[in-house]
Length: 410
Image (tube, rainbow, N blue to C red; front, side, top):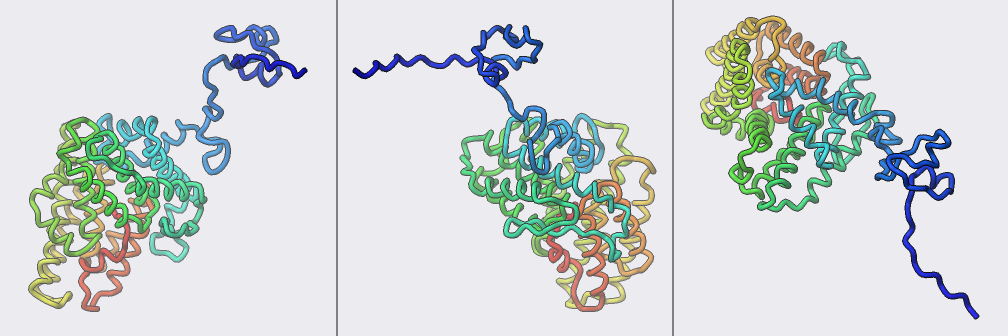
């Protein structure tokens, strides 16, 4: 006669240590007696997080804790994104806490941190920007992961996977929280593109525009600290990106007083919270406005003339504007914060140079920028400026050459 099956009795789980020793745990809390009596450390009855001490057990992030990854972003990346650092820096006090609860944001933060850490470890920031020995970052695009000096495939795979997850994400316009997470992830990926010097930034801006279109515009993002931070960053990045995407976009964007005013919101946000920063803020605003004028002067001149080098008066006026930019730049208080947000303005002014002394000055400035941040967009930007200078007299206008760099210089 077959044995009767025993009635089902759910297994009573004890601590992990008792299960490893194959003994029945007495389930005492906070630590079971069977472990305590043998001098063993008991993990208790809670959920066991296998890798709670680090980001991963293997791969690029092995041995690194979340705190170490966050420290990299907080110390070396967040401070580069605002004119003056402090409690108002949303890249530190909004993005990083959000990453703890949103996996998509976390992946973007991990990619930015790992790329920058790997770049920092190569220690090539003091190498001449235009020397043959300079280790220029290769692009890291979703289509093909190309090896970059000192970089491992871990962060590249994380970066690509985050982009793929974004593309598959079905945004619901009525789901405000999901919309904000999507936009924050794209903004963080744009920062990653700056860190790596990747040529993905046009694609990322298409993602940003598509997301905003589905969401229905800024009005559907609400009025919270997070939404205000996101809107400030989008307005600023759109203005800086426009001339790098196309000449038509640059002309239309920089000719709009509304766009310019909104792009300055990030600077205003910083200066309102740091009244002692008013002198630096004023100089920064002047330099950025001068760079807008330099760009528009060249773009509008193209409407009246088919020739790039038309001396005088065009080159004479351009040289005067560049010299004025240099004079204002040199008036910036030494040892003051804020120069890190002048990368785009310096890139535009440098592109307009026709005098050797001006070109030498801007190469030194770009070298100092790169030595400070280690962002690879600076090395690619400097090399593209050199290509623009080398094509002097070719009949090509530098405003039409800017988009060929396909790098987000900001």
